[in-house]
Amino acid sequence: MIKVFIDGREGTTGLRIDERLKLRDDVEVLRLPEDFRKDVSARCDAINSSDVTFLCLPDDAAREAVSLVKNRNTVVIDASTAHRTREDWAYGFAELSPEHREKIASGKRIANPGCYASGFVALVYPLVKAGIVPADYPFVCHAVSGYSGGGKKAIAQYEGAPRDPALDSPRMYALSLSHKHLPEMKKVCALTETPIFNPYICDFYSGMSVSVPLFCDHLKGGTGKDEIETVLCEHYQDSRFVRVEREEGFLSAVGLVGTNRMNLYVNGNAERVILTATLDNLGKGASGAAIQNMNIALGLDESLGL
Image (cartoon, rainbow, N blue to C red):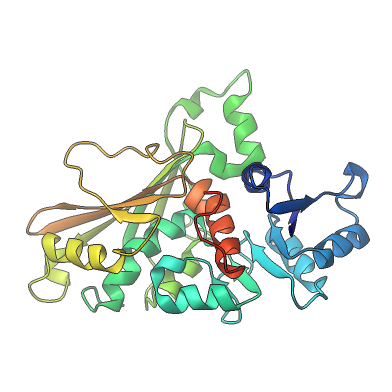
């Protein structure tokens, strides 16, 4: 029986991980009494008694939790931003390369990717790696997400009454252009320039679309829509959860809600291309990816429970 502890189980990601694991008969979730869930000694015991600990905590609390780990066999999967750019942690997006997958499989410290970052790196990493898009390309990324991505506070705002009429409209945020996902977007894709990132929170619970426009005359000579689609298809041809699809009409941000899947699309014309990733911000963007990483780290079928 696999012993799992979810530190921060009461948060949106923690609750979703817990819900998924309840359906498995090979997992025992270690639980602390309500009065002890913030007790350092109790958390330390649970972490070190576990085979896998998920950290669904703010960054500083996640760093503190890692300092409590004494059991060298405990796998830590951190859903915060605290460790995503650290070389000594595996970046938990196995589909990016065999090297990413091997580091997840062989390591004990795994940083779960950010939801927006997952869409961006899925689109950009293969193109930079293939030399189609230069590392100094001035990337711009637009994204929309369901309000669950804002955590309990945002959920309470959107689902409470009376409700601010401003919530009826998509709301652009991170106006300082310093969103917390930017460091991993830049580092994982080996970019020399930080992208401009333009996210919106919208009036639906979960789901996400992430779009990256490209000018063809800034790409490797002769590269256009078809060549980009071919590179992405070949890169993800063996993936269980990431697929390249086609859509010429409308793209919905909610089409993959409840799944661990991500769909990629390449649209445009001979001069301009727009790349889009759709996913569930609570699935492949959070809890689903975390469980997939647990499965890989434990040598299980990566789709188990997903």
